[in-house]
Image 1 (spheres, rainbow, N blue to C red):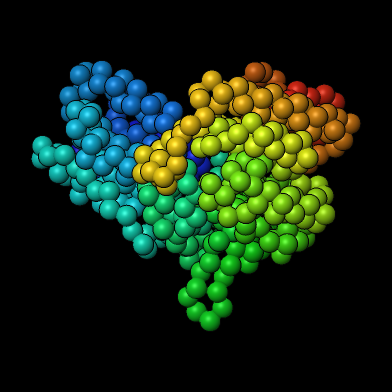
Image 2 (cartoon, one colour):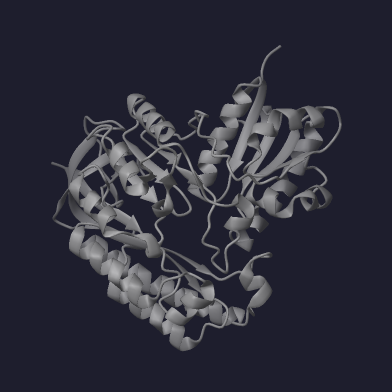
Length: 441
C-alpha cells in the first residue's frame, strides 16, 4: 500500500517553520510522504500563528478556502496545528466544521494516534502543554527550497510574560534542548551542504542546559556551534534587551562566522510604555545595550520590532519611539499596530484606548522613518566589498543571483560561475532601501 501524502502550510514565525519540519519527520515514520501539491494530499496541516489578530484571520480565511478541497476530495483530512490550535482548542472544531484535527505545539508526537481517531470518524485533539518537550531527539525533515540556510530550535516556550504576548500561553514555559542534540543537528546541516544556520528561541539569551556540573549557557552553545567549521555561518534570534551580555557581544566580535547582525526588539522608545508592556528594561538600558554593540561589534547591523499604539500610548510616548529610532539608526525593523490578544495581561488589565486612526497614523510615521533609515544604511555600503553567501536566483531575473552579507543585507548581482552555497566577494555599486546591488570582484 503506498504511503499517504502530507501537505503542510506554515504561517507566522521561523519557529513555526522548524515545527513543520518536526511534524513532517514524525509522520514520515508513520507512512506519510511530504508533497508540495495540495491536490494529491491525504492530510493537510495548517501550522498557525496567534501573535496578531491579522495572522489568525488569514488562517481562518485559508480554512474556509480548504472547504472546496474537502468537497472535491471527501477523504482528505484537515488539521490545524500550532499556536492558534493551542489558544482556541475545542472552539476551532466547533467554529470550523471541516477541521478534523487540532494539535498544540507540544503534542506533535501524538499525531499518529490522533490520526487513527480521525480515520475512525472521530475528531482528534491534543493541546496539552509540556514542561519538558523539546523534540530534541527528532531529526527535522528540511523543507526549505535553497538548501543553503536553515533553522535549529534550541529552546521552546517563554518566561517573560510581556503584557501583549500570547506565547507563554500557547507555547508554555521556557525549556532548553540538550546542547549535544543541537550540535549534532547543526553539524549534520553543514555536512549536507548547508552553509548557514539560525539558532532559534523566543529569547535565545536565556538558553541554559543545567544537567551535569557545568551548566551550558547561550554564549557557550553559540561558541560550540561556531566551532563546527569556519565556513558555517551562524545567526540567532531573538535576543531580549534585558539579557544581552557583553560576553555575547565579544564572542560575536571574535568569530568571523558569527554573523554581524543583531535583532534586538525594542517595541517602544518610551520607558513608561515599556513598563506597561512588562518588558523589564528602560529606554536608558536599551540605549546602553546599543552603545555596547556599537563599541564591541562596530560592524554589526541592528534590527528591531516596534509596536505602534499600545495601551495608553500618548503622543509624547510615540515621539520617544521615533527619536530612539533616529538615535539607533536601525538597519531594518518589523513594525506593527497593537492588536489586543485574548488571554494576555493587556487584554485583561489594560485598556486598548488608542483610536484606530491614531494607531494607523503612528505606524505610518514609524514605517516612513524606517524607510529613510534603511535607505541610508544601504547607501553607506555603496562602494564597499562584502563576502556574500549565495542563496539562489533572483525572483526578478534569471540572470541575477542573490545572497546575504554577514550583516544580513540582501545583495543582488549578475550570474557568473558560482552556485547557491558558494561564498563570493561582491562590490556594491547601487542600492534601494531593501536591497544592495553589485558585481563580483
